[in-house]
Length: 416
Length: 100
Image (tube, rainbow over all chains, first blue to last red; front, side):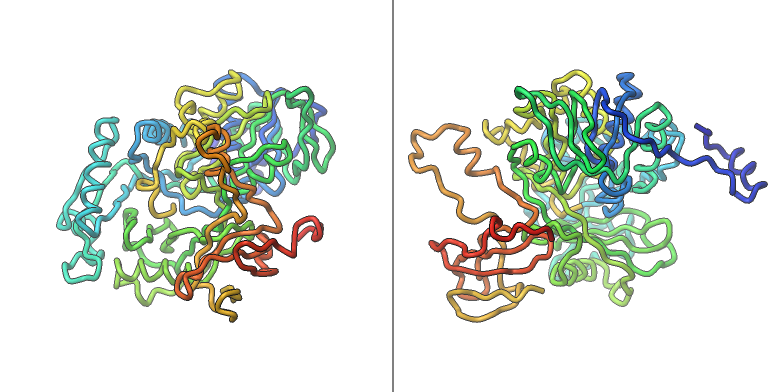
């Protein structure tokens, strides 16, 4: 693998950037692998990367029915934070945030991780009480969270309407300075390139359409390119997890919903942080290109069509204009949808299943992007050792039978 | 925007009057006191979540406020039928075995 560096950039400039090495190979599938990862999005690629790097398991294939990072990885609004309420979730997301902080160096690929801070606004007394509770919980878990009053919020985001005569006045916010955004494509490509360099086969346009199970043990998967054997299979298939699980005769506690986002025309820099509001239900940041990146809630019905409905767009933009009247005449440029696999407790599933050797990493719902490195890290450990990583253990599918749910609806709040 | 026929109001109304409430025809455990954790967990949380024909519960929240069922395709989003609570769907996945 050619290393990326400033010097390399200058050297390639001399040949008009025509001689860059391809980021990964396009191999033909082997008959069998030590481990197969189904799903070539961010989480799947991260899993493959950490399997190779941390556990020395390089005879691995990532099977992707489309192209790498073409699903939710390419469709999310790229927010990274770890200010979750409960210890289990906070530990998992903070683990991920720590990996984010060194990720560009680790992958030798600039993932453009920008710790510009995230504000979660409070508009009612109850909002502020909830924010205080969550911030205190964060601080006990060593997460950099603070409570700000309206004046302090105004200092960070001068364009936010903090006047007290609004229908939903800004009363304060929680503030996590280490949170921020990253470049979603670069994350997928960085993990893919680094995994490929260690020998992982990235098989695109390879769709799994069956699971072969013998005596309760997975032995491989049927694909459109034939049977591929493996005694360890990890499914990281987000919105399509229920479909993949059905191939193994399993039922998951998931519902797939369309979640949409939109971006405006590019503007000059005006918003240098991320602002989210659970109450008026919208969130916004500005990308390095200058477009405002906007998102909100899921469409209420189940759906696999990667598009969203107009009532949801209208609701989203109402929320943005409520917070930022200055944006009322900004025109929207593009709108799209992804399919999120929502869990009843708004927490993911990182779990063994009733089929030996078959694991699922799914249910990240509306906020999986932030967890990409952490999810891959603990799931790789889980696949390598055959049982759940300590951080993954509370996220077993079994919690939907024992009732030991981790209710993060408050911290997951507005979809992101 | 969906136009949804409410079987109680007897007319097509806009989607924004309705709320989707998830999978339909979920049978509550018949003998609650003697049901296992698996049965309860299954009833409360586990869902078919099919890619294709889906029978689901909707409520006409800003209308008659009654619950009813919808058969809808989860890729094309086409609404194939609506029918009152207590009735069975006429359109099922088995009779529509064709990919979207």
